[in-house]
Length: 132
Length: 407
Ligand SMILES: Cc1ncc(COP(=O)(O)O)c(C=O)c1O
Picture 1 (tube, rainbow over the protein chains, first blue to last red):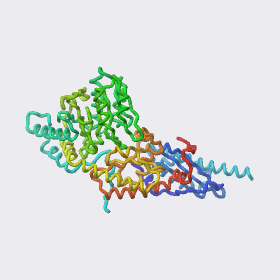
Picture 2: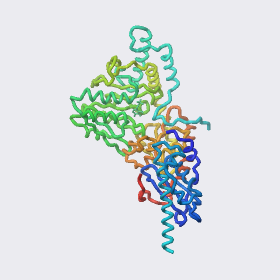
Picture 3: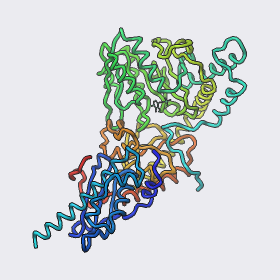
Picture 4: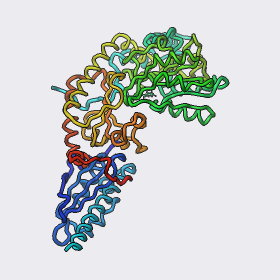
């Protein structure tokens, strides 16, 4: 399959690969996908004052399009508020990376990862508020 | 170390045409352009003579008793189809049962599917962890309705070589015809239709350094004489078994390709085996969590199929994009299903997604092998650094215990 230049570029020079401390209350972690399906994404956000995402990291097991989708997602997340981040849709990723139909599921997974990371952060915050 | 990029290491998918093959073909595109079926002039005679010479060479390569047993086709897909459908149609009054295996090429499996729709019964034998079908399995599956057993000489994905000689003893004893898709093994591992009691065999030129679009079906003419119903109607070429004007330049090249293997096949296999082992050991000595798919003992010399755990196959192919290989990962197929061959071995889906097939061939060099091994090592490390699964594995998390969100 031929890849778009943007997919190749992200896959070869992925942005923001790495790990944030899962136990940090300001970090939200989303782990989506399954090894048996051939893609697993872990996306993490670190949320600062005023609900702005200060940092985002990912690690992905998956094809070039899956790596590119998560790499792009981390780029887009940084500097956004949680509410803005929630507005990122898989279609935006498809358009930006020019993903072919068989790769749309990669963008869906990235959207799921974003939502799941935000969810995790919010749960942690709620738990913190409840315990104080 | 000098290597030229890109490197072709996918010789199970096709092979480059040997320059010696091309040289013999060229005159048949130029002055010798005659139709081999033209009986009335020298253009036709020259073409026919060249075709018959190719037939003899191919017959010799596979141990056929007569060159008349070679029927030229457009390739192995056609040969497989003619063998299965042609035999089924001819012998349908004798029985309606066919035996094959789950790891066969799609040309066999899909032809069987069609025969099932037409009222035939097909047994798809399972394989063991190495991809092998045993002669005992064949014996047990044969019924009084069985007319044909079709099992490949060697598998295109995992290189597993079947015990055809033992299987041929069973089919001969039971009076059942044996067809083999010999495409991948021809000239690389031992293959002799007499010794193995093979009654029909499919081969194709483009996997043996000949041109694409030309193949052959071996059809035994004595003990037993195999009959089949032609699947292509027309001018009655190839003794009525396959109508259509012969692809003379292609057939000439096919013949030369066979002749090269007759003379050099043994040496070449030894060289490919050494290269393959060099590649495999360089990779496996340096990396953890790499698994061989298929048999190490009964395997094509130039083939190695490896699963790099925690690294997805398509991402790997992209990372080594100057090296042409293939993968059993779902992402490389339009169906999004991982390789049915790897599944049949019991390889888990996650490892099937991580598989890479390296197919070494005549024109690969030791320098290329070293280059590819080094590249693979660095890219696997890079991709594992990017893999959440690798990180979890390093932390001692059992990935099977994780609740994944299947999608
Ligand atoms: C085992 C096997 N059988 C059949 C074929 C089909 O051969 P062809 O490309 O000549 O139709 C191939 C190659 O793709 C093969 O590997």
